[in-house]
Image (cartoon, rainbow over all chains, first blue to last red):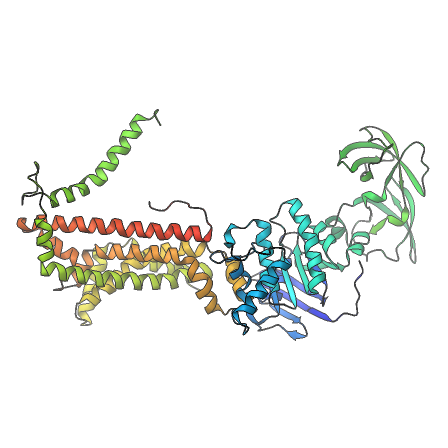
Length: 366
Length: 269
């Protein structure tokens, strides 16, 4: 999951600001996207991720700052000369043209012969799994097929950067998961930098080499998926990526990287904060992912720490069961996830249980 | 449906009221009598012959055709600019400017015609077909803008962006993507402006002094009872012409929708 840092920079943002009238849509974006990287802009709607993508495409002027594309300042470079191509959220398939005309649209000014262009179109269609669809009317395609046409149309121009604006949001769950894998394969095959905008954290985790999590026009954290998941920089990021339990904590003592806290329901814990997020002045809480908590059955012994609890809610998912558990006789409720395996029955609401956990899985936010 | 006999007869009565008089037109146009009254006297094509032989009428029809084609073309072109600007761009004074463009829609035509007449006379522009065209463009442009605005509005903005993104200039994007997709709207605007212009009377009468124009000519002919049957024949021809025009417009509209894969949300037929 790690991405080598020695690749050249493809996109660079330097203190990018964007105002719509009084509305401050982008508030000082900094960061680089490497060549050949699968990069995601992740955030809730209205966080500025699509605006940022559109500044790369050239559809949006920036108010201040610099956007560099492949070493060149993109200011004043119109969309039609940028080495970027975009797959739109609505796919923007031209309804009055056939599939082949859509895919070949960008080749209109290409000096190659008609036959060579037709061959390029056929190859592009084959690449996205639509071999032989060229003569179909574009409007007669399904959502997934339109998406593929949009991909082929953008990739046929061999752009340096492919921009994808929530390309999977209109597809149903099965199709979406299928296309996620296809997109990853396609990106490896063509080696082009992909920049994906999504509000779906799972999609971003699955597909990306690196992810920029955005809130309110700012990048809250830019990291690889594993770091984002295990070591979120802020409570907000932690809350947005996956599920995290937040437990109120009191800081008892602090010495270098060692902090001792009293977490409600868990008791006193000594934490190593060398990798913990920076102080933000929030009320201290410790975060725990559901899978770092384990229900202990009668015959099991805890590995590190153990806390009593009572099951408040059971959510059955087939392969997994989620339990909401009150910890140690307090009103602190945590969600934990257990894999359903033979010999380990799903427990009922009200059952008294033992919960095992490890201090190293705790993330301190303060 | 069976539960509402009142509504059903209301509908029938309404349609009869609307179209009954028009049905009388062809009936009397083929009636072998100069008096427009029942009972019918027998079948004749005499009135159509008279109509075709009338040199003044042919001139008037020709002039009206020139006016209507010019008005439809000019209004639609102006409508394209205005509709595109109002849908896609924000500019200072947009609301008052669009309001002023649409104002002739509700302004009494009589007043527009009089005002134009006064202005044209005072700046000494001779009245001609050209002045009629100018006046009618003023009246028709709001219709064109209204029709074309809805056509431009239904266009997904990302289609334009996709074309730009794929290397086209703003102009070639307009030509290759926008124009073909709003073509049904352009056709509808053209046909409606054509129809409005063709039977427009007030401006034609005020600003077309001396030139025979069909609507003015028909009105004039009704003073002579002997001419009435051939005017009915002319009316029959015009009704037929309207039906053909409308049918063609509807055919084009449906074809446009089918081509773009849209859902038919009902037209006028």
